Length: 385
Ligand code: KG4
Ligand code: ZN
Image 1 (spheres, rainbow, N blue to C red):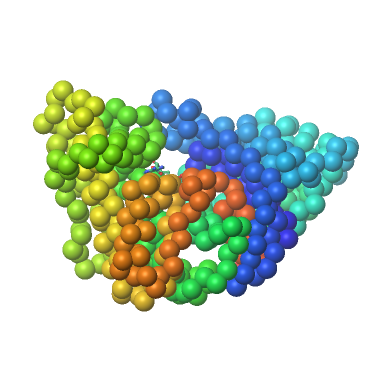
Image 2: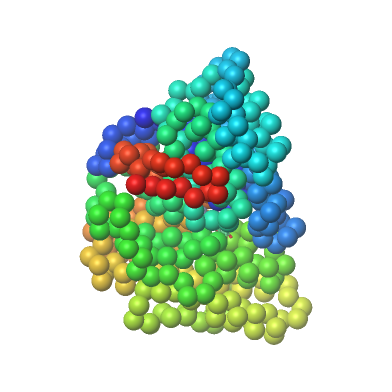
């Protein structure tokens, strides 16, 4: 099955074409085309993602990025293909909020032949509503123009299943599986007892861990996104053999549940910074080091608790924060020491940030179950049966 996958839930406009074979016991994925445009530079001056800007950029970039992914997949055949008036009217209605996108879209689909794909997978949540909508409407318009089935995909499921990829394959995944999802918007422990069915067993009560990384970075005037900046400084502190000079708390470490809290940790950093009016490079390294250690300790403790309580056989890390070297190392060491029976899956670095390959992988498993959108509406609500 060949799938065109689209992701616009946050600040990456991403489109991939993947070819997938097999089933949930053993599946293989080949990336035929992959195009991604990150808006990070544009959002940097706002210190975070600015939703209406994200939406406008997606609208501008979706058509060229889709063309680029299909070109790489060698699926673009130039040929004049006129849409009939009824389809054209439906597409114009769907995209009426984005007149510029509509003209670029109509031009594109009428100058190429229908590509050899079997379905279109689209992220329908969670994410920033305006950003999601523009992607969903674009995907619906493509599905109409090319008469292809549409598969709505959950972004978090995309992170989970793409982390399971090993040399393009997903096979012999032992259940129950536990996923630790760590991103700018989420910190969750999700249990999968049956394939693709989820139970939320723990989550943050306040900030997401990525958000805490970003906020701590901002307090030290480091650029957005702060996670990689903090990580670089903390690694330097370790390389230089610096002691952990700040004693930061490990919130909720001993609570009886699998929930997290990062707001208190962030506030402790704020207090520590107040004591340092002339913050220098050395201080920044020390703070980053202490903060990263504290965040990793809490993630580790709650994940171990969940593993033990639920007899977990596979552990998956997913989301932007799973790119963090220290966190990856901590999990590798802990699992091999304490739970060698658990298979640990860390995502390939290029799959940690948002991308469309993960949407294609999840879309394939959903398409195998024939979970296509049955009703196409211009309000971005997809109905799945
Ligand atoms: O999954 P993602 O790309 O987007 C969301 O869905 O939020 O995650 C972005 C988050 C940001 O908070 C960013 O600072 C964080 O992931 N991040 C990191 C690292 N790389 C990205 N946090 C810690 N260490 C990193 N190396
Ligand atoms: Zn994400």
